[in-house]
Length: 267
Length: 165
Ligand SMILES: Cc1cc2nc3c(=O)[nH]c(=O)nc-3n(C[C@H](O)[C@H](O)[C@H](O)COP(=O)(O)OP(=O)(O)OC[C@H]3O[C@@H](n4cnc5c(N)ncnc54)[C@H](O)[C@@H]3O)c2cc1C
Image 1 (tube, chains in turn blue, red):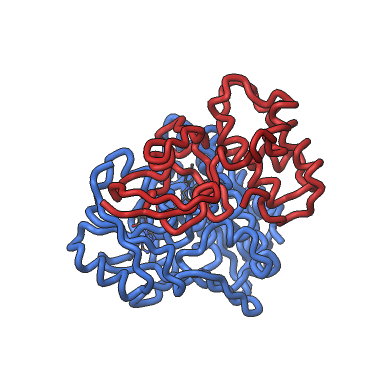
Image 2 (spheres, rainbow over the protein chains, first blue to last red; image 1 turned 120 degrees about the horizontal axis):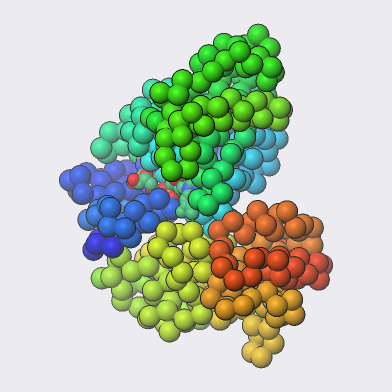
């Protein structure tokens, strides 16, 4: 790892100031479960690390009926075991509990995951399907506006993800087909029947440009929220990732199979 | 360089370290606590698991500076003198190790797991939660047996605080 300097602000304002002072060389450090491995590989060399774990305004979960708000520095483990989320959006808690392993979940945060937008990150699929809002220190963006493409979001240089909020769907289902070695998704699908009756289908791990909404499936499912509604559909191979773990044809087929499994589980 | 200060196995420890120093290197090189191992470079193997403020974390993926102010428990902090911690004793009893390299991380993960699930821990959960700990010798069979046995005799209910902390 290259040399760096560690800072521990206690407010969002202080963190923003440190980011500005870093003149593009500073980086936010949340759970560190992506950034520290990257620094160890010398693929990143921030001169300053700004630790977000001690800013109370970035932490915590509130559930008010079906309205859920999760602070950016909330860990995967806190989301997975939160009674309010388990009751209002069980499939979302289930998703958080399948990220990485227990030690990764104790540190990794939802803000870090959405800001990073790894092509196999789990939350983005759910946030796209549910129609979530991403809150930053300056604005609010829909998940559709926020997630632009692989490792690319609408975040600007000195912007911090402060929270994620959404309305719990009437029914949601999560199915993750894991690579047996890395345990990241080869394809994972979140299906949501939203409270306004529309359907969202978010797919991660499979697409060649990050998580995406499978809009054909959304229309097919708005008539009947059942796996059989997908029977006549195919996924465009050209938009799928292809690597040593699976071809694009394999992932295109997997997307349909995994979506059906998510629907079978939806509650 | 920064001054870091944390409670390690019940004692206050301080040191001057470079900010890029990983917690595992602070424990091993500065404090001489070499029970915590480094087995990979990708945060996947779990040989370095310790508890920070009561939670299992990978000490190779956390800076010593991030842990400053926290309470850390390493494998050296589990036994009471000559008396092994029940999870250590269960690994011995069930032969839950061969070469032993992964064992400190396995045991720290197991203690955390039993602390959260108590006696209700079942085999499927143990295998799922060992996702972040790799053993290249045993095929996991005896590790799982040891953890289940320790969980059963812990007699505790879920969410009980971890013994050593
Ligand atoms: C072994 C292992 C297995 C994993 N498996 C999975 C998996 O199955 N599924 C999955 O989805 N993820 C997985 N991950 C990744 C994990 O979920 C990370 O925790 C997550 O991707 C990043 O969150 P973090 O809090 O650790 O962010 P960090 O590593 O601290 O930061 C990541 C990036 O986001 C930026 N950032 C952090 N917080 C903010 C913020 N609030 N606002 C703006 N920018 C910010 C940082 O500057 C950095 O560029 C795994 C990681 C490991 C090590």
